[in-house]
Length: 138
Image (tube, rainbow, N blue to C red; front, side):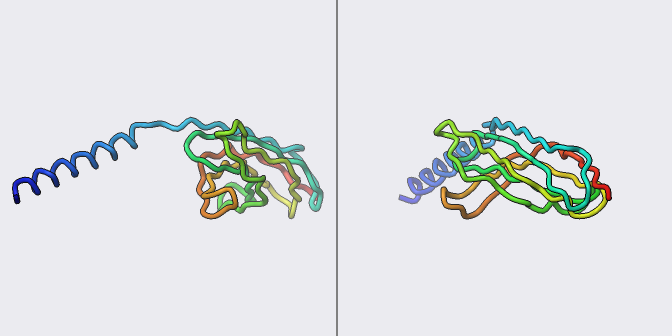
């Protein structure tokens, strides 16, 4: 009886290892495009940003815009587009406006987030665009 139990545990452990190894070998495909214009702006003025993205790594997704001043520091989310389901052929998109808050170099980027459900919940970053610099002047 103990031999059968030991054999069963060994088989179960091996099956678990195979499943975990299989997860690590898959590679997700994702793409993102992001644009901001113009690349020079006056303090207090609004300018347009837009982007699109898709990843086959998760179910629900949304496109967000993040910003920070200078070339370091934490990225802050400015706004996010609506949540979409890419299995229905939808790309996550976002089109909106960002205000130049103060003088300096404002960096913006597009971020494709995975979302827990169609109504929101936990989010995580799937992929991000290269930063786009906007020179904010008086």
